[in-house]
Amino acid sequence: MVKISMDNLNFLAINKKIFSLLVFAFYSMVTGQCIPYTGQAITSGNTYCLNGNLTVSSSIAIPNGAKLIVQSGQLQSFDIQVNGDLEINDGASVKSAGSITIGTFGTQKNSKVRLGKKAFLSLTGSVSQGDPTFMGAFPGTSATIEMDAGSVVEICGTFTQQSTTYPSVNYVGAATGRAYCIAKAEVSGGGPGSVISNDSQIVAIAMGSVTGLGAGGSSFCGPNATQATCPSLWPEGLSNNKNDCGNAPVIISEEDAFCTKPGISGTPDSFTKFGITVQQKSNDWPENIPNGFLAMESKNKGFVITRVQHVSQTPQPGDAIAEPKEGMLLYDIQDKCVKLYNGTQWKCVERSCNN
Image (cartoon, rainbow, N blue to C red):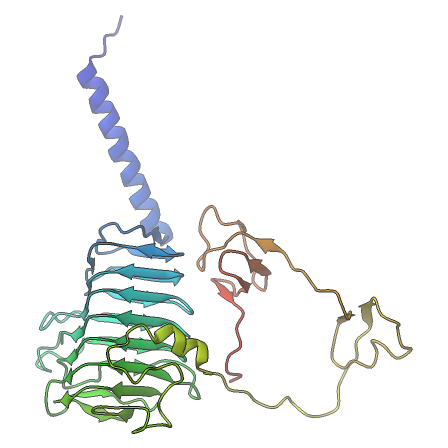
């Protein structure tokens, strides 16, 4: 008879847990899978993803080599230290009741906050940029904010930039779009050579004093900016009251960051052969519709595509669609949008620039 003591059982149970954690870590490393973010400590070498809304009551630290992606919804938190990457995807947002620090002075490590289309970052506190190049002594690294078309950074506290050899805010969207970086309190830079942005699509609005920081190539309004001092740059939804915080979502809803181009003219090379209608069919329908494959029409009926509860931007185990195919369309009930799978990611179908 084999006797197994309680100590042996506990040892086996502990080792089983350790083994499971190691397997999960190895799987995540091999597959590049995002670790669902629930407010836990973030560790270097890992990517964390948030889908939906989450409130974290403590501060968040993103170390060098780590990435936190807000894929959809809103992350609410207190202070945020970004020494790695914080990505706020299209239409997502981050609200902080504290401040955010991007980069650490002299570390020679890259740090970045990136905002997608119509994403926003809103803080009741300040934004501080720590220059990893040691004021240019060790070039090759940076601490920056990257902004896509229609995005908004709203800083209700102070804005401080240390770098003097590169701008802290860069535009990464369509050439015809624009993004807003708004500071409602004092703005300060590193002195001569320190500029906020070299991109004209960045509308930088300083509602307080400005010292040691130049406009660069940005569309700049300040110091002590008001709607009256720069009406052409002032976005709809931005209050003149510097103490009124939380304008970012209103600005996004009011801002039209889109462009259009006329359709291509010329003679059609084909006509529609198939049609479904609940109306009185005319003799030349659907053959009178150029360059189509299938035409459907009704005066009081809608077209309903496949509806699923949710699919993550990057496909995850447990998603409603297990093996998406490039070009697949569906309606995401949770995110309230029609999504297209482009071969690597699910993206909400949105109006954008036709470049």
